[in-house]
Image 1 (cartoon, rainbow, N blue to C red):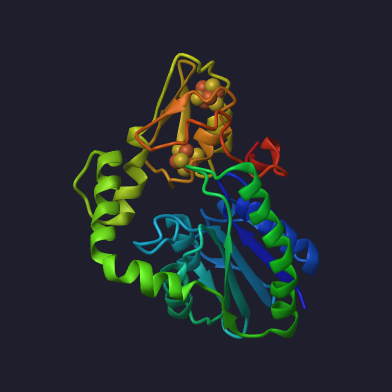
Image 2 (spheres, rainbow, N blue to C red):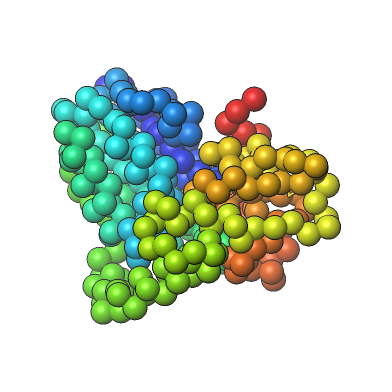
Length: 279
Ligand code: SF4
Ligand code: SF4
């Protein structure tokens, strides 16, 4: 049974999850940005895993690059397809959305897993982070068993959604759109045109030395270094890799970062070089 694990990751949570699953299943690990420019994406393996973070869960949570990726996938009939969402615990709408797109491509989502991980905007205290990492190691075995048996199932926090979020759904959605509008400096409500512009809120302070690391870690080449400073190109995915991997903490923006934790967040076992997807 051949397995391919496709992943998208800005600060390493989804990379580590994808890498662990690939190791456990003897699967091949493929970064989604390396495939995204193709017109049609065909993965020959019988088992396909797609691992990615959830952004703005109350909208639909699916990163734009994952929407584009799945919409280009072909020959999905008869494959065992599963998704793993790294998030702060809520992925119901995201799994629904990706399932819908997979169906429109002739496939079927067999299993969807939710893996709570630290938020890369406001990471929790180190002890809490460690707890989340330990929980992931325990869940890996369950996911492996599902894949091996080609079992169907979904793991998502429906109680959290039904009791806490659903009653306030429209208010929370409006609030999130307003926040994105502020970042993007626009009144657009379409996520496809709004999210790419959220990089308008980014700027650098005087500690930027022009090293270019932000441009190298950007999974969608949204940053050019011009006159020794990053210039954003308005096709951002909102992954925050540039902000979190800048060695000087030089990138600021209207995104509220946790200034009490001076070092930005990334999964501790992931190295900067793991994030370089291009030469
Ligand atoms: S990584 Fe930071 S210091 Fe380096 S060019 Fe980008 S913003 Fe400047
Ligand atoms: S510009 Fe920054 S936040 Fe936007 S996609 Fe690139 S790395 Fe991610």
